[in-house]
Length: 161
Length: 125
Image (tube, rainbow over all chains, first blue to last red; front, side):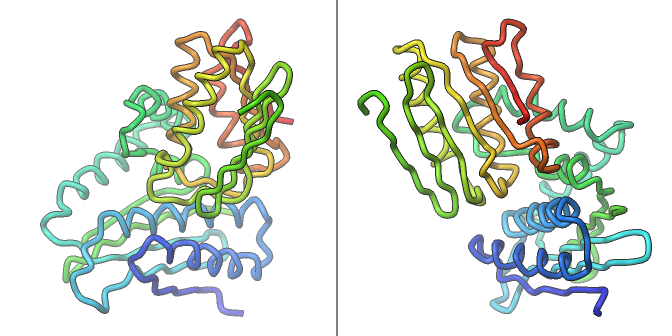
């Protein structure tokens, strides 16, 4: 059975659920526990949500590319999307958030800290700010990112299940 | 809404059922909360329930046991309500299914909003 799944996702919010279901089926087919499938599907979902929110899909053929690799001792999820110079603020935030999460010995502490902070924001504030730290805590994943050629942003989450 | 009446709200894949009982207002969540801005759907339901509960001195129970998935943007309106309840007078309880790992991880973290007097409670069943 293929140990790798590649999904091309249209950069539209309604497409995320389809990608979630495809990912979930793939992970289930590899005999992962329900808990692991749920956690990894959450990781996929949160990363695609960020892609759709912050990616720049100027070309009509632009897509979010999701790759899940199941290896001997780890599972990696990578989500790639195009960006442009207007996304640099987001990249700075991404970098800052990942470094901030890594600065905590236990991702649970980071999650709790962020919960406290977000809970005090106004009710109509639209930013969640919980996605990456949730990936780290609930998804038990180590996050990383790089900006590759042609302004393609790759965000990855690696976990051991 | 008259006493003990049931109201159902559906937003995309999420269903929220609100049922007023003798001492409580039960708010049961089912399906998936996956909207881009779920607060637009969730927040008014919760705010209205809080207004009603304070007038009637009833406890709000947020029951997530039948919920299959919520994105991180859906957690935000819930924790904002819990934070405000913690600082105010609202009685509010969160109930989740402890045997589901994701629910246990997500909702046990909300214990930071618990109050010593039991006015805000978080329970895994």
